[in-house]
Length: 72
Image (cartoon, rainbow, N blue to C red; front, side, top):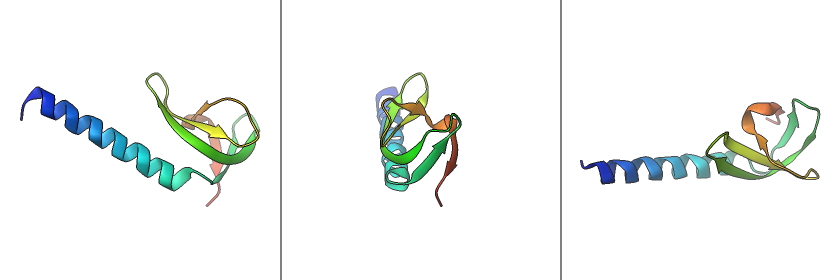
């Protein structure tokens, strides 16, 4: 396997995991560590922070690591 195809495979795996996270989390209710709450509207991939989420009713995007709880 060449470097190029290895890099392409990694990129495809990252995108596959991003789409899986979207399918699993978008629409679920969350409470953030700062008390904000709402449903996850969108998930983005940020090169500095990893997964970031947008929450309905709140402006901005937060690292997934700041989620305190997610509706089961």
